[in-house]
Image (tube, rainbow, N blue to C red; front, side, top):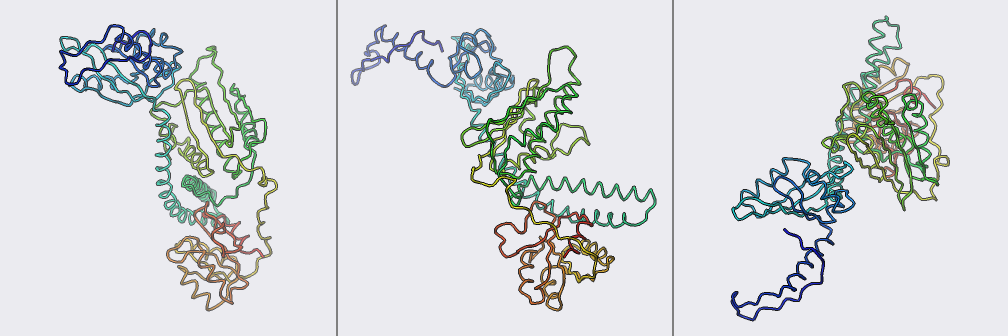
Amino acid sequence: MTLPASPATPPDLPPCAPGASPSERREPPPDILSRSDGWTRSLIERTGFGIFRCTSDGALVDANPALASMLGFPDTATLLSSGRMDELWTSRDDREHCLAELSSGARETSRDVQARRRDGSLVHLRLTVAAEYDSSGRLRFVEGIAENVTERERQEEVVRRGERMAALGRTLAGVAHEINNPLAAIAGFAQILLKREQGSDDRHALETILHEARRAARIVKDLLTIARREEGAERVRLDASAIVGYIVDTQRYAMETRGIRANVQLAGEPAWVLADRALLEQVVLNLVVNARQALESALERRREGDGWIPTLDVETRIAGDTIVLTVADNGPGIPARDLPRIWEPFWTTREEGEGAGLGLSVVHSIIVSHGGTIEATSAPGFMTRFTIKLPLASVAMPTGDAAGAVRADATPQASRPLDILVVDDEGVIRELLSRYLTRRGHAVVTAVNGEHALRLAEQGSFDVVISDLHMPGMDGRALIRRLRLLPSASRTRFILSTGDAMASPSRPGHDDTGDIDVVNKPYDVDALVDLVEGS
């Protein structure tokens, strides 16, 4: 592909006479050919696709401005001066694959590749290449067109990631619920035994059991967060910049003592978002701590005096109806092969025991559940940047300080005997609650499901009903609705227990469950007793 030298207007070629043979056709005048070449060159110069020609060994001999721009060069001359195609063919396998297809007789071949820009970052290109042979049939040049598909790939990856996380979330929600039931029994019995006199060895063993059960429960809660079950959480209008500033301040001392510089640039006006405060703080804290740890690991490998200053850059800004939060560091970066996997649960590059690999999965789920997006970019050896976009909240909404107060727990009073009905399809949970509450002087009756509980309630009255939220057949919500129709339940207090910490039994859409108390599994037995014995 020898590119014409100068642009010109399209040629006005004379048509052949109808029925004329090729030998009778008139050859265009030289000036027409020149104008045609110029027009072709003009189109090549103006097109948005990259066009190039290189030798079979990769030496770049011609290109257009679009290709130079794609690869981060200021102009074609600068790109050509590099003289190589390493920027386009970051993978030798990709180039060899294309050359093999062309040598086998293919007219042209296409391949998606990762090209390297002048600043070291990567760009996704779709290359369509063809071969030019000399008179002896030997490959002389490779000519091609490059299309920048980076944005398309990004959007497709966002969709694929969302589909994967949705499918994974449904699975995790069910698994987490089932895990919390045995954890509730382990933690509950450990707490009961710790209230008795124990030898030092036995007490240490019980404390270890309780500690590990609670650690497992935190992992389960993270799994439920990944499952995007946060819709029941209370969301109020919050200033994202204030939360970002607070979180960075909590980490500033730890960073400064290691020589890490923290630059914070917050929006000049409140960056209002509709969010759950605890979840938004969790997102910012996770990203800041990850960046700090990355910089600390780089500090251990860097030599003193090389001029590198470990730096964390955090920024919030308002762009139209969107709030943009970026957390960036100039640490070791994330290898290109690992970048697509950072959102996967339990995937981590850290040593065993340094983390469960759930942090970024949780962050991703929280942001998506709040109607936002999160993206990661990285240049290995130079930087990593996380960019979060959240919708701007209406200024008419109440702020977190003005939001309605959460209903306080009932005030505990001196224990008095109560008639208690415990409803749970898990026998170990029925045994735990029955044994513990009976030891406190209460009369406890257990039921294995909702129908069983209704039959017992029709035969007598109960002061308190503790029902599991998720049960086969009739669930806890439906049971409470049925029980409240009974005259004997007019003064009964209802408590729902659940292994899904993200589920809210009283959220909108579950109209007639009314004012109920909720306790999460695994139980804190002291908090459970306060709830049961409260007035």
